[in-house]
Image (cartoon, rainbow, N blue to C red; front, side, top):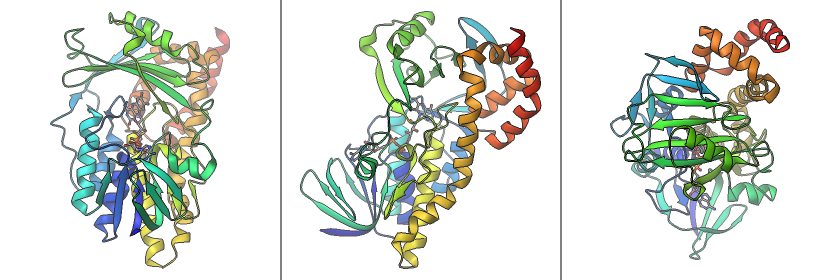
Length: 383
Ligand SMILES: Cc1cc2nc3c(=O)[nH]c(=O)nc-3n(C[C@H](O)[C@H](O)[C@H](O)COP(=O)(O)OP(=O)(O)OC[C@H]3O[C@@H](n4cnc5c(N)ncnc54)[C@H](O)[C@@H]3O)c2cc1C
């Protein structure tokens, strides 16, 4: 068995952030992934202000926007009518995950993490992992950063998530030949999915168009995606759809067990209103690695989980507030009050945009919502 200080399973944003942090601190780290890089991940690729700031903090440089599309205008739509167009907003960077994740992965290797990607995992057993090619790797601490279908979470809990409580998204990449959406602003369509929304994000060489929302509330997600595409003048053929779960705010209060810490999607760290997950994945990967480092430096690997849980408190609080707030945004009985308020109030539009851009935190938003709630409730019952 080859021994390391830390094994990181999954080389997405959470895993590469964790591996970079631990390897840069001088620890012996192996970075595992069943895929070989570069690999793709179904995602809108919206890289927010929050992502840019965590990227700078974790990888020690500004995010290079050369490969991304940057937009400073966004439109909000509801059932085919435009609610608002906001111009000169803070820049939104739209990335292709195949490139973004490869950049993060290369950072981890440059920091000194050992590349063990391209091999599926056969078994996890406490402090060791056996790869399907027979190799056995051991470590004092394992960080499970292997996404929504996490094998580490399955090892700990029997299954990664209850799919009836999490979200699901469908996407296509529309080519420029199909429709020139490239010069368009970002577009968000409320009500294209129940407890979720539709999006159209211009990229270099394509436009990522998708719908996503709570899985249980959208048994007809494919039909919704077809209707959304048709409304944009695109081909709604279901054969081109790709789907992926997202743990939409269903975070784990205790992110792991014993010497196994879960980060990113594996720990359910996705914003339940906007669906943003890249920033939370990178940050939680960093926090998991820092907790592991501290515990190892005290020769007490079993302390890592408690340290990690404490360091996640602020993020958990934010996601908890968001999960409660989403009721008055997405619950079908509140939809008309929400869109009415959105149409009328420049402040609400600005707040929503800042939320999406990762420029506003939920505690601040919650205070603003409490101030407006009486009028909002009145609007709901006037209808
Ligand atoms: C349709 C959709 C649109 C989205 N749009 C956005 C957006 O615009 N902006 C945003 O911020 N977030 C978005 N998200 C969320 C975002 O994609 C995730 O939150 C983010 O990718 C989480 O990063 P991660 O590192 O935790 O997991 P992942 O990025 O999923 O990486 C996990 C890694 O683990 C590997 N792995 C999995 N299983 C195993 C195994 N058994 N053995 C070894 N390796 C394994 C995988 O190959 C993968 O490389 C979207 C999600 C969906 C589904």
